[in-house]
Length: 178
Image 1 (cartoon, rainbow, N blue to C red):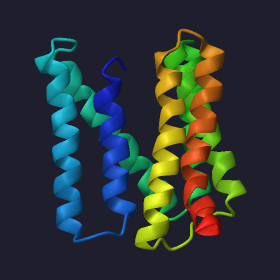
Image 2: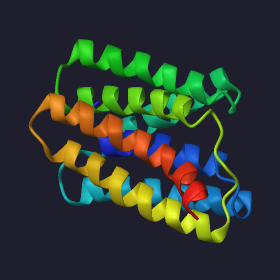
Image 3: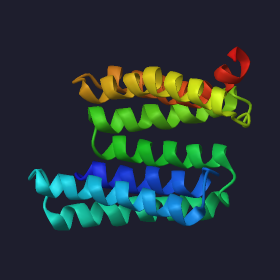
Image 4: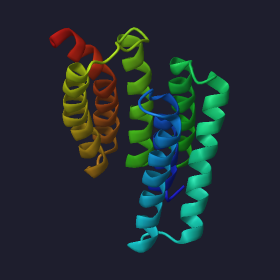
């Protein structure tokens, strides 16, 4: 799908609202909904997508989230990453591009990263949560951003994979360092 920002934001922010145990559930859902709609609207406002394309992207992202959530009961993270690998492989088989290889790298990085952290993340304190966020977003987010800015499918694959694994490892690293 071309409106990948809408698709990705629906899946990622929707998942975050479902799994992050912070604040009230309605507040999490409202914040996620606002972020998804703001991203989707921005694509139409700046003229890079038609409204219909963005709506299809939102439905695809939400549908993907629903399928993964139901298939994993919201708790089987390895299975969720494995499903993401299958979807990314299918995407790369249909359209070989920087974006599809970055998606595959991110899915594999998530699957491998989740295994390396032992399938569990430590309970965060305000201090370790801050360190994890700075580390994960700084390094992992930087790698993912670099991956999406490159014209090389190999660099996109590797940088996104390492970036996602870094984001997953950040809470464990912060717990051990702080």
